[in-house]
Length: 410
Ligand code: DWN
Ligand code: ZN
Image (tube, rainbow, N blue to C red):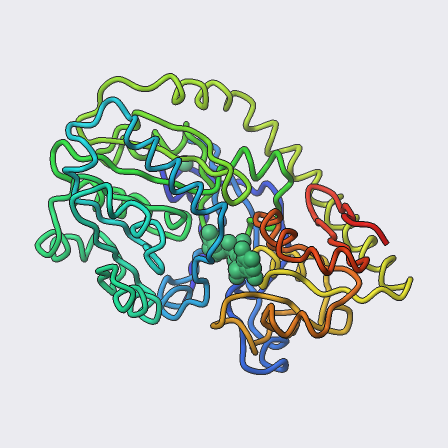
């Protein structure tokens, strides 16, 4: 069901530990009962880096089938995501080294979830197809009109998929490359899916943003790899893909977007800017490890202090990130009874390790706490925007990272 890594998944060099978050259950393994949630198996959560190529990764890989075959994460409706899709499409349109205009491109996205990005780009391109391993979510995407193949995209399945939908002019992988144990195999498969003049677009949480923002909650078992431009470029090159563009977008706390091709060629000035800023990554990792311990201790003390003053605290967002946080701090439903989340698949279920019950935003309106611990901090603007009545009535938000901050007036 899992394997422990002693060597780098990118280059096979030796890996060393950067920081440990102890043992944690799988972040999206929400359960039907509180007892189940409290007795889930826990796995080590150690962030490591490669001594040879600098690639940052966990030293454990849980089997994909266990993590993703029945998935509860559904891309939420959010204005900030819509705005991001728009600017991503604009960046693809402006990318000067592509062989054909967007309007002529056949686009395939792996890990396409409910098809939110494909829906956003559909009117600008020739065709779209999603490939999504979570059968429950792929089925919904199909019903909603986004053609989606319910399969894992792997080196083994690529020939078959190329038959069905290839060759592809633009292959998109957003926030799923971190989820793969066989990253080199998947990158080789992407290269095989592409037409000779096609482009690959990869987006993922950016390591420097994770480190700079002390986003220790980005560390959980689904996130097996943590991406920076230099180490990713090296790996992609060894798999037949040359990076020609990179920029950092604001979504999910800071995400790197790279555009690569099989033929290679000139690189954009944005690429060089990102590249040049990665000089001190080793030192940033070291500082992150140090701040992580302080952040966990600080948040634990802050929450305990608020509880001892008699404030009720619920979390806003039944996020994977939040589950890392609750488990690292050691909080359970004794302290935090409810987590609010808009995803129907999560509602009525219990958070792994903490046993917190997930309720809908409608139910939450009827039992509001004094303070929401904002575990979906990447959607702070829309959530706080939705909750103006709560705030006007004196409710406050506790933003956990990079250090605890209370927002709102008593
Ligand atoms: O990489 C991954 C990222 C992109 O998504 C996955 N491995 C898992 C997942 O991580 P997460 O659960 O930490 O993701 P989010 O995007 O921070 O989740 C936001 C959660 O907040 C969703 O469950 C929906 C919920 N939400 C809400 O209740 N009300 C979101 C919005 C915008 C809202 O208004
Ligand atoms: Zn390596």
